[in-house]
Image (tube, rainbow, N blue to C red; front, side):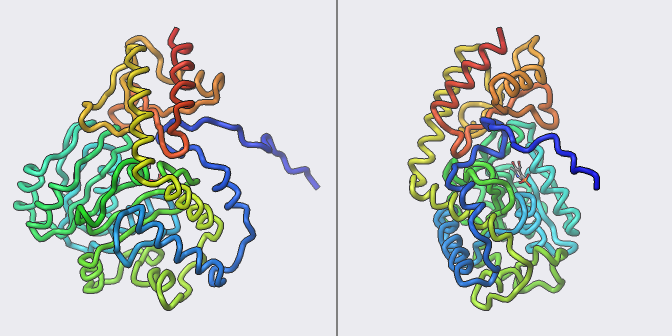
Length: 372
Ligand code: PLP
């Protein structure tokens, strides 16, 4: 019998300072290797209940329908869209980066009549322009990206939520990169549907997508005339497993759920406000250091994401060569630009466990070496 060929048996130890995944605490990695139990085991059902209640705390919501979808952040995006949209429904999507473009694509595939409102990459939307488009289009749903990972911009939500609801629409937001790093206030902002991912500021491996739906969103979902386009992501069935009946739908990824459970415990042990403050302080330290190296931010200071620093690659510096050197010499991963920002920006993540003073200093020292 031929021997199985394997070039690597041990994954390298990296310092993950890109757009995600971020570094993962050893407690979360240990949770991944805990004994597997059945998806209806009383122990696992307790884990699910605790996770739902921790997710409500992290999303700052009382929404009953709050759970972790099996799949990465994009599965969360599809879940929200396909459960709210029926063929022919109108949806407005804010496109100011790669993930807004993706949401518009997902909505089109779900059969929505999509109207995009666009802003150059790095900019954010204001309430007046959203008011104008919702008055004109009269959509069922408005979708926005709270933290555009492709550009490093933070979209203010509260005032926009008011104009969306005044027009009788539902508000859907993407918090894949924001959750656990900057305030996300689902109830206070009156958000109807939200999804996130595990691998950014929650510092868990990729694999689950926390979602939450308001009572108004549930009413719309319960009044559907057509079946949800995706069997796997149909909340009318998935919620019977996460809720009272515990009806089998699909086999939950047990150990991924252990990992998220532990990651959420870590978030709440630290405290949300402390965590936001840590992200802010490390961002400010990085910002000061980058300025000293002559590196400029690609996004205006008033809507910069502390956890995703998009910076302009200095003239004459070769993007890929620097990122390669950072990885091979220092074990540090940073991200390149996406879409129109490719080759022009670096994306430096300070997410979750990776948002530390130590990482800021390490990166600045390593970057200085690569640039001289
Ligand atoms: N939305 C945003 C803002 C993201 O940053 C990402 C991933 O980077 C996604 C959606 C998609 O998530 P995933 O890659 O986990 O499917």
